[in-house]
Length: 338
Ligand code: AHM
Ligand code: MG
Image (cartoon, rainbow, N blue to C red; front, side, top):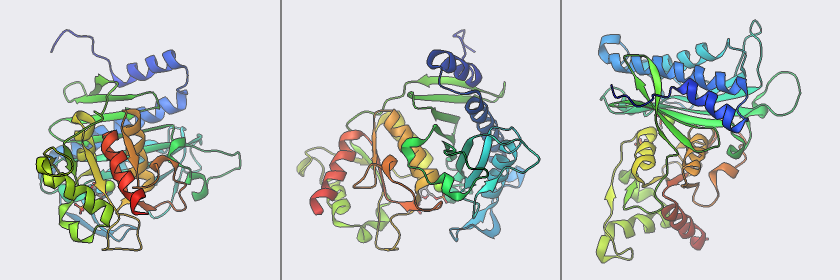
């Protein structure tokens, strides 16, 4: 171990509170509880077949997707960890049909927590990076009780957001609206240690991430953008592009946060009535908040993701995010197409 001062997540949050005076105690507790839950999920992920956590659970979620055992386990870990601390009013999850109220026997807080407990489910059984994504909103209005309506706030109102990627290392990425900090899980001490503060996404890139197998289903502006990338040095862009696609949004976004790039999950003709595959409130919004806080951009091809006012909890959205000049270009191509 090196002799550099190690800053734990707790210490980071306390120092942020002192420096900026705008992290309420309840929010700090909430982040610590989510981080602790992610640690438990990381341990379960790591056990793999030894922990009997691989394979399907033989149930379906509200989106009609077959749940994996780890989807169910991660959801339970997050719900159980968060419901008794008094910091939350309610939770919502990709794996739960409707909102989960804090049981009456526990005190109620003012925050709302949304999560995708296990993102990249198709990668669980093949030992490829997966993750947890979360978004924190404050309950606005003083009406008693909580309804789904309370959750339907635009992403720009998030009090915090983060994700944890379970890969070769477990990394927690967090924003409270004051830049983006990265913490690495030290498995020997069991603590999240600050390993980077003020992460920045380069404005330009030569790397894109998209599921190319859907090419024939895309709309013309997306096709135009990718065609130009593929044309490389000889084409309109005058430079060669590389492609990466992990198929876990957490891992693809984490690469972009680390070295730049652009991620696209656009609308396509497979399900023309749905705006996209990914979910606005617990996938796109938290990722958009993190990406913007790191100097990048996030749109649905036309609108800033964080300005979209949701109408439903499990609403879907097209996503273009990452290096700001590339996202701007993709968005302009959509505007030019009308
Ligand atoms: P999930 O939350 O059920 O795992 O689904 C979301 C995932 C994203 O992580 C990823 O970007 C996308 O689905 C991959 O989809 P595909 O490769 O099937 O197009
Ligand atoms: Mg997901």
